Length: 246
Ligand code: MF3
Ligand code: CO
Image (cartoon, rainbow, N blue to C red):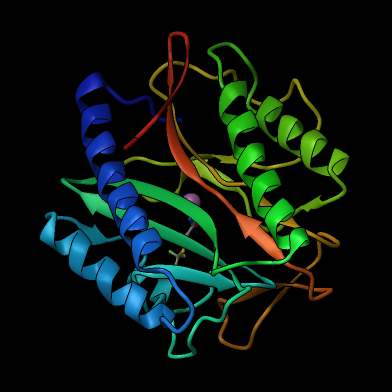
């Protein structure tokens, strides 16, 4: 578990600022008829114009800047030429490498007007991330984060994905420790100032099961239900969590 210095945290804040600018730009461009490839091209242009490098592009052979996950796709959807339609639920995950440090964040957007279940799923998943961030306090235990997420999400009648987890982040996209969105409280290492975590709840409207497409990336709900995903990178501070890049 690597702890970052204040100088490193400022670079990670910059990397994450580029990520959030990119997500803001996607929100501004999102409407029925836009393709996820067009959003991906915007993202790559913006990241490079800001002096960053797309972190997911070529990561273990991943072919794009963004992950764009539509409806029953949980994470790792690959951008393509299918136009988005009114009522779709679009998860957008973006990673940036900037001056040697990674930023990683994701949001889920409604495309135009969406149905009531989609609306509630997006709101619950966003709230699950907020609860996770509020749980981050020095001296609390790592598994308190996942326990808080799971308790809230299941009380809302949805399920948390077990097959993918959050992670430490820094000079690598994925560092120790893993950050599950489920489990018992009071386990794992104590949170310490300088630790940086990418916290990323993935919530399914139906069951927690996952099936990966033949492309080796696209991860869908096994039961075809809708899924949503929000992520921020946070630094543990003396008095809680600092959300980087915002
Ligand atoms: N936020 C995701 C993660 O932490 C995105 C990775 S996509 C990949 O793993 F293409 F880079 F794998
Ligand atoms: Co991540």
